[in-house]
Image 1 (spheres, rainbow, N blue to C red):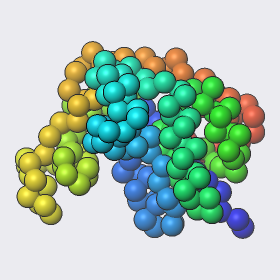
Image 2 (cartoon, rainbow, N blue to C red):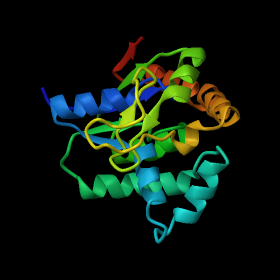
Image 3 (cartoon, rainbow, N blue to C red):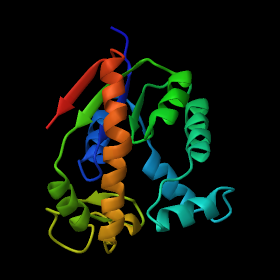
Image 4 (cartoon, helix red, strand yellow):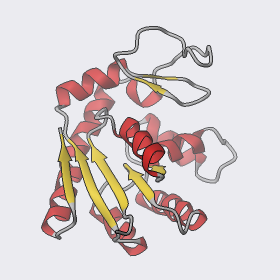
Length: 192
């Protein structure tokens, strides 16, 4: 059977990044995670989209579709023969149309989690600023044991009001998107 790409979906804090890393490592997928791509742009002040991405993320808003489209297309252009695990790259119906123009050879896996549990996870997770390794709320300590780097809270997790904005966006944009894949007959799995 031919491998398909995997579209991994879930509310912020549901563990998509952790699951994506495990799937990629164990099954040979290349991970496309929009959040990581956007954060990498924030490390390059000379990048042509640095200013708009920086301002938008600090306001707790979504990066414009045109920029997301361009970054996704660049990712696929660089890896044309790879099997891609897509983590958070398609965030609304307009982006799905763009993505489906690239490929429809994917399955959808949705990780369900309540908003209350997601909030606890987001408020407790930290990141190694150098390696970008994420440490969940269940990690005890302030230092990455592998690197000795002091862990920090991600910029997008520091403001509860902004987290709730992201939850509202999930309800208004992602839930209808999930329903559209089911309605259109895509292979679809839900994990809780």
